Image 1: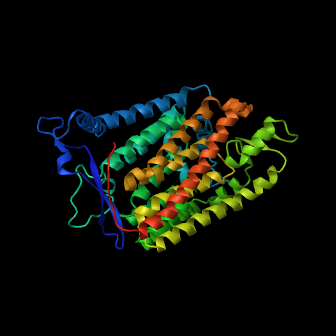
Image 2: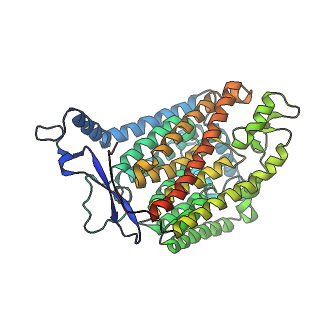
Image 3: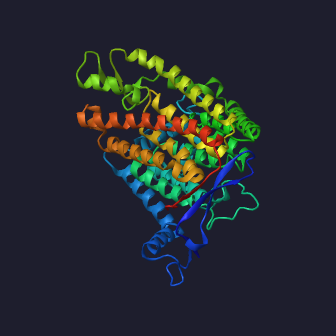
Length: 478
């Protein structure tokens, strides 16, 4: 068995013509067999590193961590007095009970989600209404398990691009997939029970696989992202991102369009009519949610008891919102600002791609910038939105390695700050505790920072594309 001590990142030609991409290779002097051994070049520290790497790549260790983390999050989600899985056990199950009684949300009446969101909600009822939460957990466990196995074992992640014929393959394929797998588990743990207790779990699972398919299987990428869009609408921006960045963009576009139309036809045949697209109008009726970045001024105004500023519960949307002087104007402006921000990011992506940058250089930063635009300029700030960040970060870690280290760290901090607020101290936030307002302000400020860094990375990918080919030695940390 090979254990890689140090690696070299070498730029080699790939099937992506006009571009260069990263390949990991381990110098012969630093590859140890059966580490540690007398014949090995690894000494005390290096031998320890080799042992840690081997342990981190051990399937039993990886899958044990996966199961334990998911069990813990499910336990907290189902038993905590703050009801972190209340959306699942109360809201989702109620919708399905209504469906059993003959009234289908999204078909017989308007709904906040696209049609395919019904699929996991219905499937979770397989164990009965009393075990609806357990049924939901098992579905998420299977979905995340499939993605986890895909990250660890798929050729798409072990060999993200087709190497040149003369390129020496790296031992164990691309070791960065193990980094991405461990980071994902850590992120879920830091985000807390909400990481499994929302419909977003299924959307993100589809998006992760869809983005990773962008090079090798563009048709599958379009299909996955289109299905994700019919579960929750935000992945539509990533469909456009892949179309911009990928060389086989027509294939992606056709696959996504055919899938989207097929789902729409099924919905119309079921009698949905105009309700099929009601999720668009349902979202526009929202006010300023307390956790949203745009809501920060009004949260502080409510704390300082500025007349007219207060936190309230919207019975129609089933969420806590904030209002105050100027809040109506901000509420009105957020939607066009969000559209403008997304358009600017997409245009920057087109500009960078036209400069000659490859999909591996462009898509991770472009996807992250789009996701952050959808979060930063959104008047809704639900904690599960943090899950969206995992897809572009996993893509970036696998395709770009250390270049995405800062993004991965910031995302993990965002997850931890989010769990601190929800579910444990959410009542403190609603009661305008100054400490929790500071945490919320810091979290939302860090979201803006991550958005800015993603834009910078996207723009500088053009600079790298036009720059000279270089060789850089780095340590592969797993």
